[in-house]
Length: 330
Image (cartoon, rainbow, N blue to C red; front, side):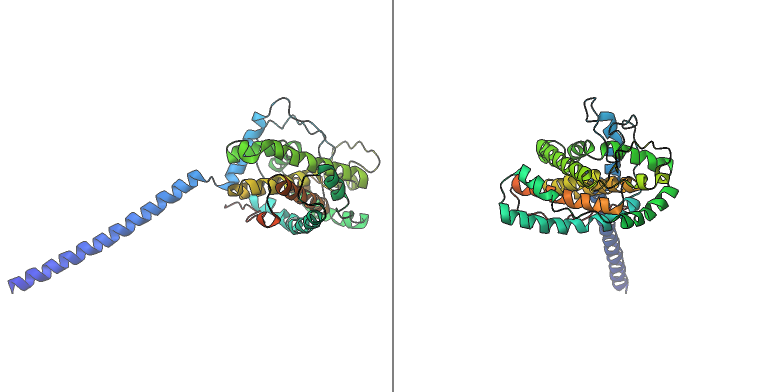
């Protein structure tokens, strides 16, 4: 009887020890998962905060010899506030441009298939830039452009100081100067993102978009409706300041497409920054949606052109970005 009692007691103890061991193992595994997640978070910074950190630090690092060319909407490219540390737009607001710009990637792919079929994959920048100007759709009729002002009026009624500060920073920096700095800080060095080549990508996008704006002569939204930018002194030269296609959107699309292929690990960063640039143009009525769409088509095509003719990638290797919108919770 005593032996049975001892045996039963022993079994109870072993069962208790086994249960505790299972619990301990489970707790240990959970702790390891938590540690791994924390380590991964340190290695791969959360996208929205990383973009914001770069945007905030960019202005302070700008050298005195940075470009001060005219901005997309006729204001000076250099701004006395470009050295300030701006907030970003909420991620879900910036991502609202996706339905406008995302379809242009496929359209650009189709355009570029025609170019490469006819011209091969060797660089011919002058011929390509001339050809590309003829591929951008004609601007919509004035009645449609006026209809596109409605969402801009809604945004104008909701503007706040934080948003205006962000928009001013992107106006001054988003069409070129911010991208090399963003890429260097993200990838870690200029060699990884081919700094000189990136500069050529940006230059072509800005040049082709600027030539088309002058040629097509489509008035900016705040020229069509001055109430969208009260207090702005518009020095008109005919129809301009002009906005079709958007130079900011063209540069953002070209840079994000190019960088997304040469530095694939940080696609959400580049696409999140692109969203910020594009949304900023709507926020201050610098552009309507069709301006952004045309600029994005142009920029996506230029990004692919450089990836194929300089990096030797095939069209199949230039995959669509896995993530464009960066939400507030991301």
